Amino acid sequence: MFRDKPIFIKTFSALLLAASVAMSHLSQACAESPVLCMIQGNVTAKKPKYLQNTIVYVESVPNTVEPPKEHVVMDQKNMTFVPHVLPVIKGTTVDFLNSDMVQHNIYSPDAVADNVNLGTWLQGEFRPFTFNKLGVATLRCNVHVDMEAYVLVLQNPCFAKVNNDGSFSISNVPEGTYIVKLWNERYKAEDQKATVSANHPASVAFCLK
Image (cartoon, rainbow, N blue to C red; front, side, top):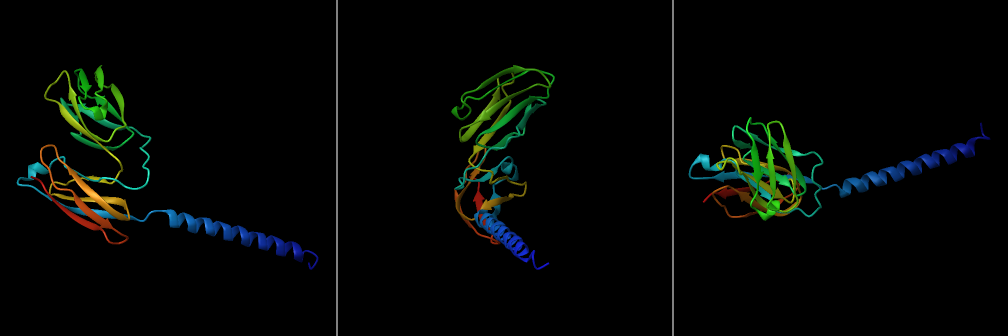
């Protein structure tokens, strides 16, 4: 028993050292992980219908944001783009699906989408396109001139669609001070500044004009 004591001490010391290193790495990882906060608020308009398809978003966050690996879908159903407004992160690939029994030819006249023309395709088929530029891209159909939609290409995932009552909530915002913007198809609102910290959500208000 006493003969094995030095081996026991060495083994125990090695385990303590390993545990200490593991705790150090864990503490460092926790320290580097951003504290995620919330921005909430309200949008007012002369008529509630003006609030439809309004997006509120944080203009920019400091860290690099990787686009999702999974594709996002914008459908063409009943001669309508679904959804009408699609916010995505820069670098996201959107699959333009055709669920109608007729052909569609989707294109964009905007440089944000490289003035793309995806061609014509049948029901059940889709054409992908990757949005690599920030901004707003208008989507239209060469076959059906009344069809129109928008893709908002944003720098980060801190965005939210405004509810029917004008309320919105943006989660997973890192601590800091940000410019919060609003996008609406027809109306505008002044940019707002928001400072968020742990357990203290920021509140901002917009008025569509």
